[in-house]
Amino acid sequence: MVAALAGDELLGSAETLWVELLERVDGDLDRAGGCGDWTVRQLVDHVAGGAQRYAILLDGGSAADTAATRGVDYIGADAVGSFWEQEHRLREAAEHADLTALVDHRAGRRTGASLMHLRLLELTLHSKDLADALGVEWSPPAELVAHLLDVGTPIIEDLRALGLFGPELPAASDHPADRLLAVAGRGA
Image (spheres, rainbow, N blue to C red):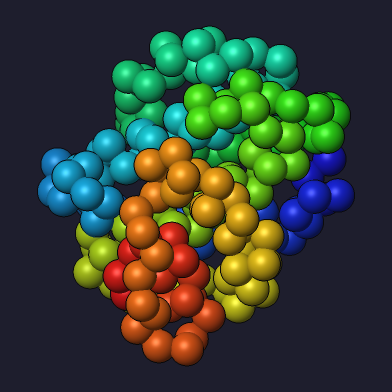
């Protein structure tokens, strides 16, 4: 159950952070998405698709089973509705999964609990990317950031060793959100 691992409130905070920014996306989906060379469309598709991929893994699927989801257009006519459809599917899968069991993530086997913490990281860090693309302030909830600094840092370190995160950077300030970005190899 999601509540047992990261708290429904934390997942809800991360989802809300993402959706509040997603609701501000206008028709220019091909502009820079704030995450490397991705466009806003690619960023939004990645986040919505991540929920579908994680649900597949929690349902017992393999990393190979998730490959077909990588080219899907999750924006369609309703990016917010599509996001929630996938996110609710993920929540349902997490409720029924044994989160202590290992899943076959493309970055290596990890527990379902670790996968759900990775989801918190994904929603939070990619909300920063979307805020940058939109030119708006990024204000993640303090309790979410504190949790990710505690539980997410080891996950980032593990994924950094696999080349999925850049090197840790100096923090722009002592503010926890800036420290989280630095740990994740991102500038403020």
